[in-house]
Image (cartoon, rainbow, N blue to C red; front, side, top):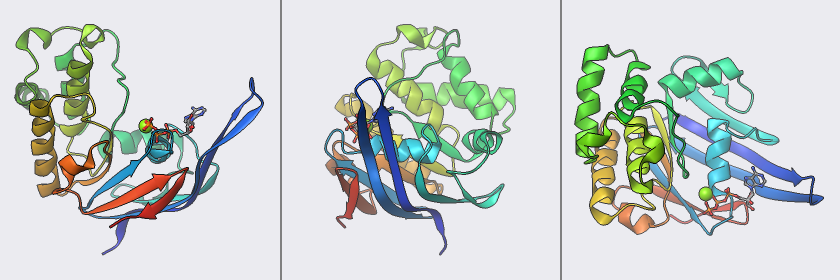
Length: 234
Ligand SMILES: Nc1ncnc2c1ncn2[C@@H]1O[C@H](COP(=O)(O)OP(=O)(O)OP(=O)(O)O)[C@@H](O)[C@H]1O
Ligand SMILES: [Mg+2]
């Protein structure tokens, strides 16, 4: 089967002008994902894990290498070279991302955030409302919070909302950056349950997990990263 994603020779470095320093965050990374796989990335803090995901989602522009993605809309394309407009369309329709740190939009309620995310996939407002309530319930977000602004939510509440928003889309490719790091055991299980459903529905996932053991039974393969370089562990 053809890969949904293949990364070849990807490198990203940062220049810190104020310190006159150059940091190689990742070096010559190679990685592939087959359709429907769930692949984990592990490694120490600062080893470059988030940088890999951010290059795929194009939060960062990589300097070297290619990120071949087999898109439904655009065919086989290099994510390090596609236009801003194509990337926005891919984020809306095909590629989801749960960031390690929380980014919530100001002045949008929890309910609106999730519903908007569903409607971007072309679902009508009424169905979106129903699905929104289902997922907020699944993650046991207190009903009183549904119509409040997430800026005041606790860390765990924000995280659960962030995950809900990415998952409801049932994206084709889902990038997860430590989605369960600051959750209690019960909430972690809820995330896992939904990840299992997504896998059954055919979503391909690339996830960074602090505690991969928790995900071990779902995970098909694992890359471990050390100082910006990958080794395949199994
Ligand atoms: N925007 C940036 N500007 C400068 N340096 C950066 C930037 N983003 C990442 N880095 C550096 O690149 C290296 C890799 O960072 P990255 O966030 O990918 O690590 P990580 O493996 O995700 O770590 P953690 O487990 O702590 O989240 C670090 O040394 C970091 O300081
Ligand atoms: Mg990180």
